[in-house]
Amino acid sequence: MNNRLKTFICTILCVVTLTTPVLAETSTELQNKADQLVEDANSAKKEAETKQQEINEDKGKLTELQSNMNKMLQEIKSLDEDITKAQGEVNKLQEKLQDLNNQSVTLEADIKKMQEDLEKSKEKMKERLKFLYKNQGNGYIDILFGSSSLSELISRLNFIGRIASHDQAMVDDLKKKENKLNDSLNELQKVKSDVEASKKENEAKTAKLERAKGEKNKLYAQIEGQAEVQQALIAQQESEVNSLMQKIIQKNNEAKQANVDADNKRKEEQNSVITPTPEVTPTGKLFSITGGVRYPITSRYELKRESPISGNIEPHEAIDIGAKEGSGVYALKDGVVIYSGVMTGYGNVVMIDHGDIITLYAHNASLVVQEGENVKGGELISYVGNTGWSTGPHIHFEVRDMNNKKMDPTNYYI
Image (cartoon, rainbow, N blue to C red; front, side, top):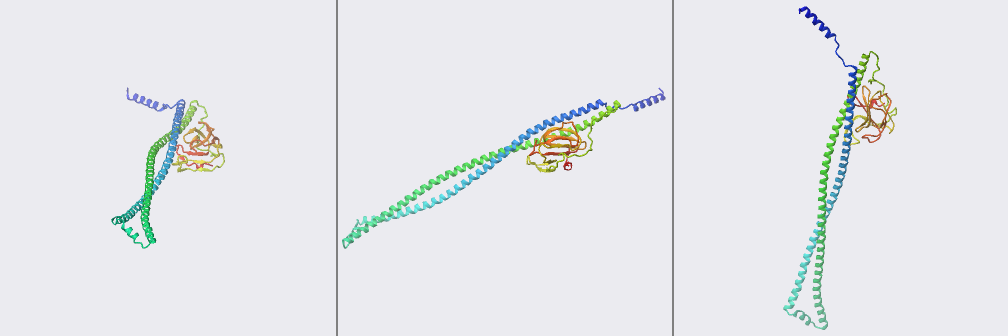
């Protein structure tokens, strides 16, 4: 083969290669791609619904745990009050015991003195008796016979009788006082014994209450740990649901574009005008989502807010509109419904893709539109309710960009 022939063949091959069109996807292939994307979006939706159900169940468990924690705190508070009361009783009994001990010391001192006085009196009587014995009673006899007259004798006899009676009376009186003091001391010892028993009983009661409080605190710590695990699980599940929602939006957008591409391809293939699938455009007039009624904003868009449900500081990336229960909720502008159903925390929800933004309307009593339905701006889509995690009837209104990032919706409430 000479060089001229080789050059000619190469030239022909280059021309054929350059002029042969690259095989493109057919309308059927593009439609199948769109259908697959829709199927993927539906699959993601079912998965999200399953996750939402799990979140609902876990939030129910969390609520039960928090209720148990609150109940436990009340029981611990009650135990603290009982412990304070019991300890107060122990302190009072201790003060009473101290007072009784002081009284006992005083009584014992009085008894000792009384016993000493009694012994002294007895000693005096013994000395007199001993004197009379040694003098064989001559002392009293001398006194009597020393009388100068009968009347003086009688007088001296009475005097001697009074001395003897006085000594005996003194001894008897001291004995009575000693007996009385001993009785008082015995009664005091009995009261002390009763008070000590009451003190021991209250100390045992206080110790028992302290042990019960310790057990309650231990149980509270366990429940608190379970609640923290549950909260972490819910946060993870909610993050997964958000990822699935982004996937749904992405798949729906891709499916929408694939449908447009399939229609355009079909038009080329049939060489005729085919009406394309309605497409959401990023333009359009805004409508009042409350139908023109200017209800107050009861909770504004803020990144840090105390949740009325959990009490925790959480972002509130929406506005709450205090609309009347049962009143209508209307589409902000033209769009396609990409979600219509129950969503964790949100209750009954409608989400609409407007082409440039996505709007979400939550806590509805009932829903009017279906997923995949085209809606016009100002069209009725639902009725105000109190479903999901809500403290009263209102419209929870969110605006998101096409990447599902939440925006401040205040300027869209007209």
